Length: 252
Image (cartoon, rainbow, N blue to C red; front, side, top):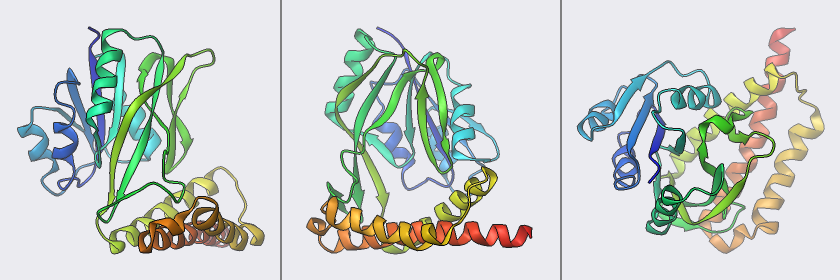
């Protein structure tokens, strides 16, 4: 049976990290955590659960995830966020891969829990992610904070049964804070890549984001949670371009 390294990046994840690590029991042959100098109990919890724990200053999601892979002992990598966990069906699918790997990478559906409610609309499901892969066949790429694992040309990718369970937000206030954080990070990344903040993007992007989320992706079927998700997703899009425009004004 092929051995597997589970890799997680963390920062102040004492609320989530134990659930994530315990879901990997019987699946991962080692668990690697790369932490960004947490100030809560994240390190204590990780070390009590026997993971290999490392630290490095955070300089971007993509950069940190690529760095974390360097600490893994085995080529087969399962990459999780601290607020994620494996469903039983997904565990069994991964164990079958370990017994007979027939691809270079594997995608899986991610199911998100929002303030206690599992969300299957708003464009949040199936939210397919490539999280199980041969580390020698690609690397993390994208534009922060939206990362993805980019496989080399010619790589074989298959899909696994089972859901990656994502415990996203425990309150609306937590979601609002993340909107501020993500929009700031995204604006900086776009600025560094030379993307312009045209007026049509600043106002058009959030408008179409809401229409897509609430109507096209049936967000209204999620009730109050669907409304909150769609309005805050729209707000994040607006803030991203507003902050991008501010960066250009500051440069002038």
